[in-house]
Image 1 (tube, rainbow, N blue to C red):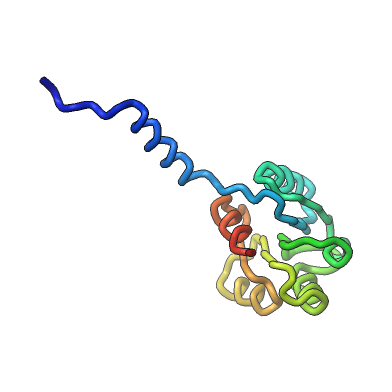
Image 2: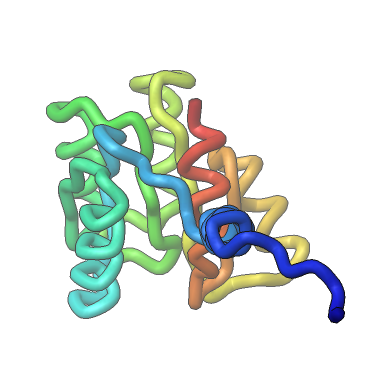
Length: 146
């Protein structure tokens, strides 16, 4: 007689729990503004966030992003640093001055040195993510936005 076998439904439950632990949580209803000048990157991020349940608006430059943030009601803004017209640091300063802490600001950038992170935080960002942005890191900060 061999060792006892676990019932199949217990194995399925363990597998389901393990699988869920590695999946991003849904962000249903979160209002997110993406300010990104790279069209493909903006579109991919929009689709991804919509699949996670977010309501997404997009802007292609810093000026358009500030206008949409002030006239819309986003909870979170994902802001590229290297934007035309107003760079991401200027966008963050303008949004902090106008909205205070009513909006959670996440910098997404190719600039990943410690001084880049510090500059982003000093400009008013709540988080600093280096491109390509890891989905786990992004969902962590989207959930941290409260």
